[in-house]
Image (cartoon, rainbow, N blue to C red):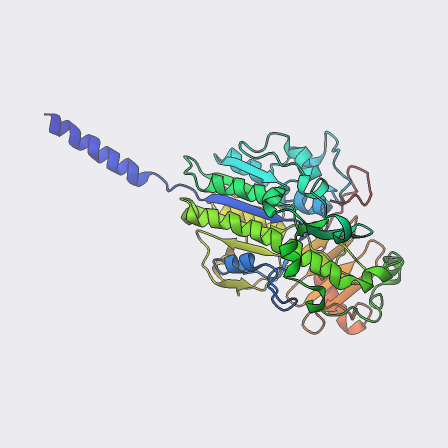
Length: 462
C-alpha cells in the first residue's frame, strides 16, 4: 500500500522538476570611468594598455565600435541606466542632479531596479550611478555593497615631492603606497568575496571602477610600464582647428602650449591609470571564473565616455568626436559565443534591452536602445542603425560603419570618412558631393530635443 502511494508522489516530483524553468543567469556589470578607445590597444606603448580586458574580450563579443550616449559622466550613465537618450530626459551635463518632482526620470525604472523587480538580488559599489539617475532611483538600490563613496577620486592618497604633476585639471604622479590601499582595489576584493559564494537567487552585481578618471595617481609600478619616450600615438596635426566650424572653433582650449609640450607625459599617466583599472577588472573576473557562478553569469564591461589628448584642442572629454565618444564594450556569458568581434557601431543605450533579452526577462518597450541579440548571434548581420551621441542641447553626432556626422544647435556641421580619415582631420560637411550622406544620417537625429531639465548648466567635473 505504501509503495502505491510513493509512486504517484515520485512521478509528481519528477514531472514538476522537469517542468521547472531553468534558473536565470546572473549579471555582472563593470563600468570604467573615462576609459577611451585606447583600451585594447597594443600599438601605442611598449606594454598593452588593458591586457586583462583584452583577454576577457576573447571569451565573448567585443564591440570595437561602441559609442556612448553622451561624452560626460552624468548624462552617459543616466542614459544607459535609464534606457533613455539625453534628448528625451533633458540631462546633458554633470551639474544636473537636483531633479524636480515631476521629472521624467522619476517615473522610470532603472536597469538594476528592473532586475530587482524581477527577483534579482542587487549588489553593487563604486561609481555605478551618477547624480541624476541616482536621484531618480532613490537611496536604497543595493541590497548588499561596500561603502567606498568617491574616495578614489576626491580623497585618494597623493604623491609627494617631485612626483606630483599638475596642469589645469590634470594631475598625476606615482603613489608611494601599494594598490592594496586604493579604493578600486578594495572594491575588486569585495566583489571577489561576493562572486566566490553560492547564492540562492540570481544576482545583479555592479562594480564601478573610478580609474582611469583623473587624478592619475597610481603606484610607481604602473608608470614604469609606460615611459613617455616610448609612447607612440599619432602626433597632433599642425592645425588641429582646421576642420572645426567657426562657431565651434571659438570655444577651443586656450593656453594649451604646456599641455602640447607635455602631452606624452599625460598619456603615460593615463595609460598607467588605465592599466591599474584593468588589474582591478582582472581581479574581479578571476573571482568569477574561480567561483561557483562563472558558468551562469552574463558579464558586461564598458566605459562611460572617452577622453581626448589635444584632438581638435580638446584635453578632456565632452566633444562629439571619436576620442570622446568611443568606449570599450564587451559582453560574454551564457548565450554569447566566444572569440567574436563586431565592428558595427552600437550604443551604450543598448545595454539595457540586451541584458533583459540575455536573461530572459520580459522585454521593456519604453527604452530607446535596441537589443544587440542579432549581433551577438552574428556580428556581421545587417545593421543600418547609427550610434547617437549627444553633447548639450541639440548637439548630436551619428556614427555608422564608415561616417561620423555632427550637427550642432546652430546648424554647424562636421562629416568625417573613417575609412580614409580615422583621425577626423578632414571635414567634408561643406562639400556638395556628400549631401546625400548627410541626408541619410540626418534621418536618425532625435525628433525632439527636451530642454535642459533641471535648468542648470556648468562644467562640473565628474
